[in-house]
Length: 553
Image 1 (cartoon, rainbow, N blue to C red):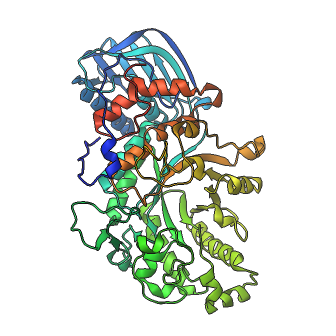
Image 2 (image 1 turned 90 degrees about the vertical axis):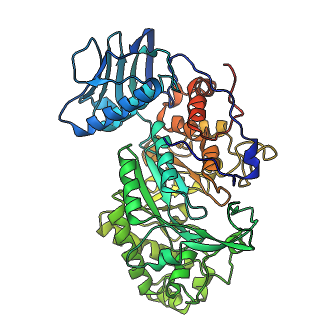
Image 3 (image 1 turned 180 degrees about the horizontal axis):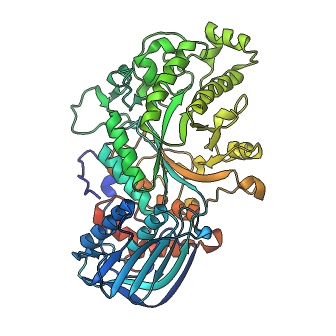
């Protein structure tokens, strides 16, 4: 993990964030998320220069994982572990066939002279390694590397454990994206939902349509806007150019980086709404065809129905669909994920009501209203994705006018949309804004850096959230594939602030999605944070919410 370079341009409120002294603690069980089953014994296995790591020599993926573990041991202690040699103490990585563990589960046994890590697949071994790391000292130390005797049988409660990051409102470097992926992986999260385009910026290189980045990736932002804070290193003008984008090679590199950490990257290409940046680059695909600038904070600040700007693609123009299909073809070459997220939320349909082409489409397709027209749009894109062996994922507004046959719903306006979709037999990802929008305050706004209003999404609310709604029966719960938190970045301008809004709420959700409900304990979770995790973050230079960080526990 890289050490972050602190910027002078932090939000003023972040100047209040200071790190307390780092404490070295003895090796113990500090694992987050808490394992499904864990039994602690008396005594510990001590890693030293006589410890070796054993694994199947011909398995190159396990070699990579062993190297990852060995590098961590060397980083915190200076000890260099050997592999597949004969010593008295062994850490063994072993692939097995244990049906109860499933793909992501693992079994860890720590005894006097042997640590045995078993799993059905490399994913399980990777998560077992993460648990081992959390049993070791949080920072570099000369103390013995003791891992307590224990037996763990562990597997996740939900298969989808994710994060959504918006990079349209504020752009984040490849380095920051990789840092976030590392954080997710350390807490056994497995989905990175990358919100790459929106009204305020298009962030992915598309070769067939170069203006998407040459024009759509840049906006003239207003200096002093509380939504889009200006970096203090820029000239103090009334407006300033803001933006950036990822090349296709950079995106592919991030996909591979995430894959090595058992994380699937799912791109979001917004349609039919939230498309102001794309329509600034190619206005012919809007209903009016009128040229426009990429929207900035003066346009977007919560204003609905802004008639000077096109936010929606024209649903009556066949060229619109050809344009989007061309884009999606390139997106699918970059992202091998099963899903492509197409947004589908907050469509300002008044433009369609005024558009002759859209009205002709409604008549030709026998659609009764604009909701039906949106459903037509989504279903047409779904047909294209299915033809390319991809599944459509969208926000819960895609329910309007009738849900596409194979679509998966991401429920953000509470759980109502997700409940309705599950009752219809559709897969659902729960991401209710309360409590899983981490761009919102995590404590009293009077004491916190500026954030989105509405609810206070505190760590205890996040910890206690359960994607299995009581309004669904056991059979319907099978359609709830998991959950994810979201970070919209209108007012998150720096890596430091991004970290602060994630930590420790992200580990709280991670435990909720991994650990059986009966095994969860909030007070114990806070103790584990204090025993290891706060120290580890501080040592790495991360910013985090510190109200729960204790001198002693």
